[in-house]
Image (cartoon, rainbow, N blue to C red; front, side, top):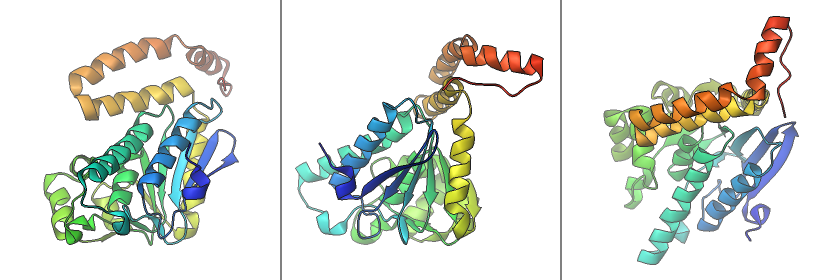
Length: 260
């Protein structure tokens, strides 16, 4: 069992329904293999807690995460496969979680750190944050789904531009490239991310999860599979007590009281 806090993954509960996860691994939120395992374990633990309805993921200090620790790298097939496996498992845990995960990008968001942010559902960036995939400088590339996530967010040309030049971009440039949804003043980053998480946590859980599952299916499996899932979930969500409560509240002109 991985001790998440001991390896630099800290969890707190700042608001009802919301968990706050901070990457505190030194230096600069590096994603050692043990950190990847710990974050996967943390997400799994939050998944089993019905009180958690939204999660904010951020870094500590000057970085969200700068990705892999170059000092840990080994030219060994077993290690390379294990590192790739654990990173993909971490991304899959976030993407398949029933709750949305909001990345609050507080500084350097580079390499595997940027790929991790792209695996989240929504990204909010501090004005001073910096983004990039500089792996080509050290003889590597944005693997563990990085090439595909960059392609889907930024498009072919811009994805390759970022990967092949290793150029870092500002938060505003990252927004224009489609890598983040919002840019806020540094001091507003965590309040804004928490505000979004609280708002989402107040929505009916089945509908929130259905939105996330259908979008993920469309990205990963394509139109036909996503439409089939959407049709099934439309019935399930439509028959839920929360849907009935929303209709009653609308007719009675009052705020809905969704289940918790």
